[in-house]
Every structure is written in structure tokens, then in C-alpha cells.
Image (tube, rainbow, N blue to C red; front, top):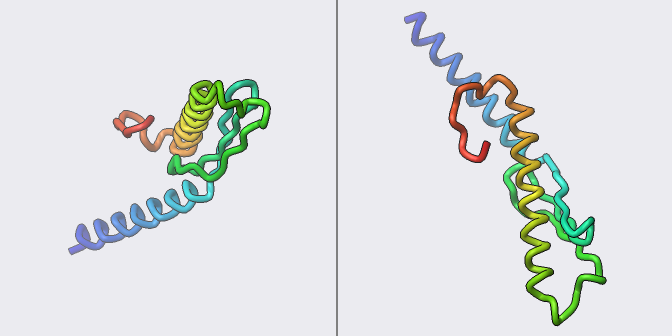
Length: 102
């Protein structure tokens, strides 16, 4: 009977830890940029785009593909920083585990 109680406590603790981590990920804000700061994005810890800022100098009808590339690069920069932040937060917790995105 004690083992069942210990298991329930452990599961509850794991659930609380997961809830805290989800909140931290939702609250996390990471900046990504490209083009020397011409395009800046802000992502949350779930890699959801929160905002984007584009310098008016790169808005040119004749160079739409370049602007698209800068946006993708800024997003990828931010996503890599989210991964780094998550890895730092988890520290040794995930050591040896294959966690997607890390």
C-alpha cells in the first residue's frame, strides 16, 4: 500500500513540475533577428510568434524574396534561442533523454 501512495505522490509532483514548466514556457520571451537587426521577432517558449518588427528600409517591392528570407532567418534564430533557454532550464533533468527540439 505504501508503494501506491509513493507512486501517487511522485505522479502528483511530476504533474506540478509539468504545469510549472508549461507556464514558464508561455511566459518566456526570446528575441530573434536577422539582417543585422533589420528584422526582429519575439517568440514564446512554445516557439509561437508573438511579434515582428521590420525596418522600413528592407520593405521593397523588388526584393520581396529577400525580406521573406530575413523573416525566416529571424524566426529560426529565435527558435534556436528558445531551445537553448529550455536546455538551460532543464539542466541535468533531461540528461540522457532524447527530447525533440533539443
